Length: 125
Image (cartoon, rainbow, N blue to C red; front, side, top):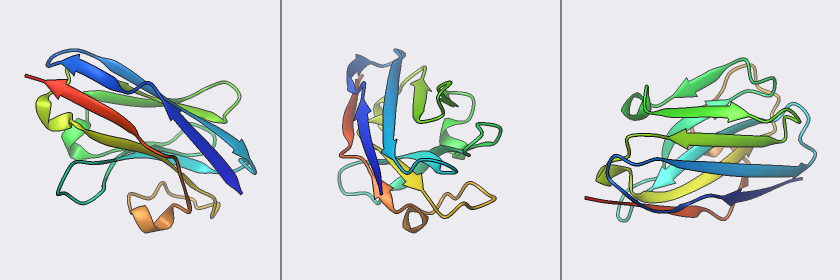
């Protein structure tokens, strides 16, 4: 079992920045982690992911060069630095964990067994 707790969401003006954090506890060894987001009326979509060691990162095309995913020194925390935010980035952001010990970082929600409660990010124009 893996427990995930997100923090750091909020309201920001367009062009601003936010940093989301996710703290994982439980059986976290080897777990890949990712951020997904879901806007009202839309499906949950992959944002960024990182493998256990932190050596491999994957980004959705929509956020490349804008968002950065990273791991803490203890490897059980993952952060998402979001810069140059736009109104279309408004969504609930979810932290997720893939405990399948996969070689690759998946972009598919079904691959992730554990999810946080989500944190709201609202970008005003």
